[in-house]
Image 1 (spheres, rainbow, N blue to C red):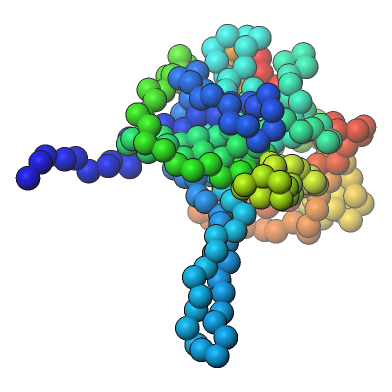
Image 2: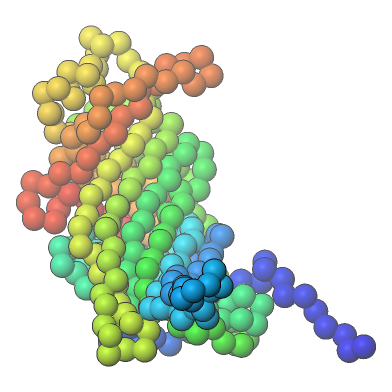
Length: 309
């Protein structure tokens, strides 16, 4: 009996590259993998097209339908170590989530942006990918921990192939933890334990019956950005979030991750408004306020900025 080896799922590499033609897979190289990625998956979404036989309870052979797919994974929020350069997760993935290229060091959303990407996953000799992909992202902040981004992309499914594992490009810097960075809300500092900033894009697949897959690519048809955060509670005389909610007050956000030049990522917003009535929480015997804000803009497409410095 010939010797063989099991396919080890731990041996995985994910890459992403922007496309020059929507839906035409971009070549993925080692440079396309310059991210630290966790729990990557790419799954086909192909409806089975089930059929019924007349005069019988037996089924007819199903016919597979249009071919789309979903990619999900996490990555670390980090810079490159060099001021003026941008990490792969920003220069590629943010653009495919409806952001525009960095202007003065910052990425901001852009309505109608149509930059698509190819996302591919190498798993121990197998290669799966989606093309024409666009996505959405959320960022998880937890005191003293690495900040992670959660990505989900939809695109056109490409048949898997037998392809050798691509060796990833390792990052030259370690990711900063969520500690030691400045945080203000409405110009005031608060004790924050964590939160989730969610860029909730609504995705739609663009159908095209002239293509064998039935799809041309994905697009973003709507956007809503929210930030749910946990702040240590203060007396109502000092800060009354309930009053701020009912008055529809607006708050400027500035939240920095990291403190070393070239590895600082700052999230800013000009006008957060409390979306839901504040919740009170008990955390280890300490009272916290759980607040959910919606990002509103003071101008077109300015409700969030992600800055690298």
